[in-house]
Image (cartoon, rainbow, N blue to C red; front, side, top):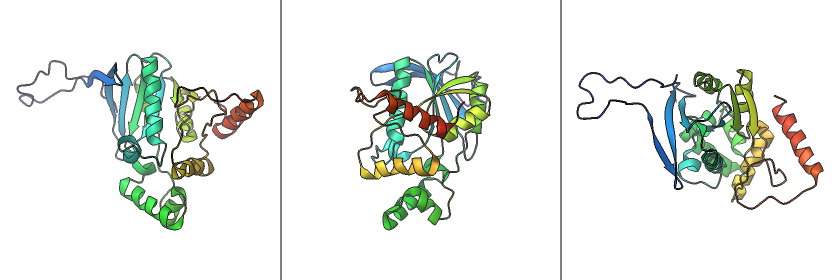
Length: 248
């Protein structure tokens, strides 16, 4: 499940290399700051990936469970919140000096990049969201599972986490496995109408909680404070969060 011990190379395979301590661990630099990172694996053909442990996370680390999104993570797409949520999560982990990123090979909500691209095209042709286009294509709206994430976190000694997510499925998977979860929602701003429609679709179809400017308890993507709103607005937002995610 996870790489913890040094990798053992067959005799002669590592000739010419310094392999006295071949652990997957090194210094990681981002935005001018450095953190130590250890890399562990989650071995599974559909829901596998990697666990990156930054710094010394302590007993209740910040944890981001993130599904791969080539368009958002690597290409900077404005049409989904994947890239901004990953960047914000890493900002928070760096600010704290420690945390855990679980990066899963679950492109396209588990359908893969090709079906994801076909789904985008179908959405454009019929003016529907990607959940509707997946249904039209005969695909499940979301096949991702997170039970192996819980198992990996347990294996690394994490029994209580602060989960950086807006996705109730991730919360429930970890909580149902026995991990004590405090949810920290991620507030991101979408630059395109397509991106904003996708956020709305995730609320409708998958019951995501998408924090807006009225939620001062959500991390912000800009250094500017959110506008002040009456306390009643904040209470309504919290009650809505509890209805969607359940009391854990």
